[in-house]
Image (cartoon, rainbow, N blue to C red; front, side, top):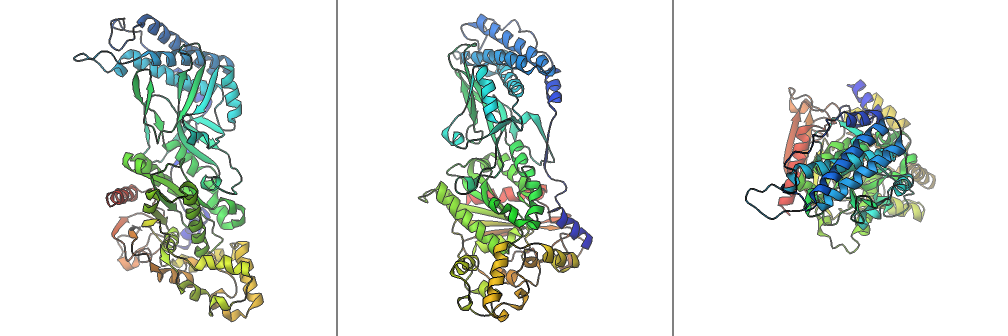
Length: 594
């Protein structure tokens, strides 16, 4: 048991079977495209009298032939490493396909007439468009490390512009775009992708100084989804083109000519890249052992560009972990059309160098700041239906966010009223915010997953005590502790805090005064709670069961409106299908009660 606890702490969450993403070698992508079956010759019925054909059918067939010839040339040039020649060939093919798509339109209604999009001409034009655009993006080196200035310059040489479909995406000031097809994801429970017109992309944004909004609402190394579609600007196949980036969360269809096509999308690849990479893989360990290094990355950030009118759901990770443990939960929400249409996901991040009181205060400030930025008049009622999901240590933090402090927390730390403790005015104001609070009014529902509500004996074992001693505290916490002892008698502090300030591991001890105080807090009666527990030892009596890190009784939520126990699952069960199904059910229930 002790060895398991030590390993879990060292790997920052023990997430063994979790979603991962890998970039495919460029040569493999080119070969895969090259060996695709060649398109069959146009059948006889593709004639001026055929269904779904424009009036200029011979020109349409010629355009299709040029597009497919350009595809073959581009594929071979790209395989040979002749990227400039490949880009020229793909550009010719894309121009022909985009022009042809604009010529297609609905025909006069007749009994038994086929959908114009289902004709071979339309299908082959759409396929040529997507393959040519994908090849073009690869030829101009849309890949990690290539800034959009380089890509835009290469496209401009080919007479192609690049822009966002709406001001909201344009305002984000992204840095790179990568074809989602150049990556493969593994261990994803419910991949969210669908076919249609366009090339799904991963839009990447570099880290910028996080000194105010909107940067505080953006992940430091952001990845999000978009889809590119080419459009002729002058109504000719040889004229300039425009690549339009569209948000697949907002738009499911795209109009070309007189036809409406489904918009292709890949919502999974950007999410997995964001949460399983983008440095989140290491933030659990770094946040635990070097908390000062990640101070500017703490808070609450959006997963996808903000959309008004959608209910925020905030995901709070546990001790020594990071938002990467939430990857499958985010993907599952996006994979369900109703949930995707009604919710927007925010991820919380905090280090382990503070107490849970300070961690909760950071999120309280982040929620208030994010809403004030996006909804300054507080008129968007979706914000008043917020859902919070807390895993492990995120459970007690969620409870703090939905409770009133009264004087319970203060009395657990000090033996005298804090007003009698001599500290500087600046220190008093800063510290008071951590233990003098009211419920976050926006939160109306909380989902607890293996919440360490009553602690874990792992924190009291040798490894836990060792970690609690060696883990550095945040400098502000150390300074506060030193200032109290320098200006007051040690007796003003509870005996457990006189030698050193507590860490997050200390907060996980069943003997923790702060954790005990959190469980005595007066809770907001309007908040609905749900409990999801893992029982790794279902053959044992309940009083002896555990998820291998937290006793079953410790993660029990006494006021939960629903309880689900997942047998044979361990503490890090956020990727478990049963857990994901229950979260989906709860979120649907939330919609039905609003």
